[in-house]
Picture 1: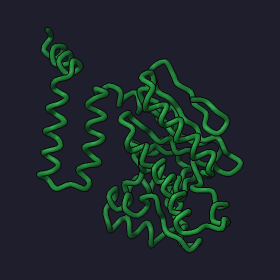
Picture 2 (picture 1 turned 90 degrees about the vertical axis):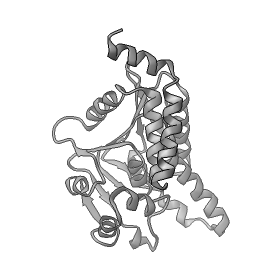
Picture 3 (picture 1 turned 180 degrees about the horizontal axis):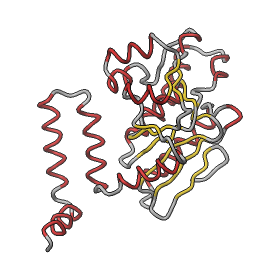
Picture 4 (picture 1 turned 135 degrees about the horizontal axis):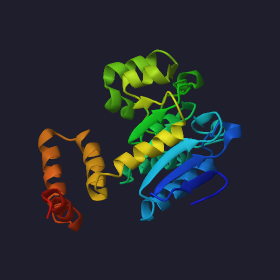
Length: 253
């Protein structure tokens, strides 16, 4: 799980810190970095010793988005869509990972990097962090879920303010809007993210994964469909040894 482009450090508690390590390009996602990060996420999902993930960036930026060099290629529409789908799948892999994933946003984040952050379960930021929405200057729009995910996260009104208003949102304003969970005023944002991940690990891993998937379903489903999905998940969870042991502990038996 280690490499030059994505560093991985896992502590004894099973919290793995994945660091995007392309600081000279503000951790912009070129093909190689995106593929390496995808492999690291797959490895974290498959490895039972990895119980939670913290995602951060090396240097002064979290992630500047997709590498602008891709726009200089002579794409056919279908080839560009295939390329774009791979980046969309990378971001979706964070949402599908049924383990706690905490973003430690150490600096500026833009474009697809913003989607990487918003796909995480919890988003902690350093005071100097900012979210940049400047796609319009390039004659494009936020993609890879950039519009849809934003509306679902903060609502249409606030999403409109962000995408059609200011081009950059500082960390404290992003918390007010609901884009970030909290600003880490003192100390190391990665350390704070580790602690937040450890807090999440107090929950049953199976219950955490089920709740994460149900939240994604609830964002699109009717109330009835959502309740049906909850019932199916609950039926599965109550049959697990983990649940039975937890109930026994709670009863003092």
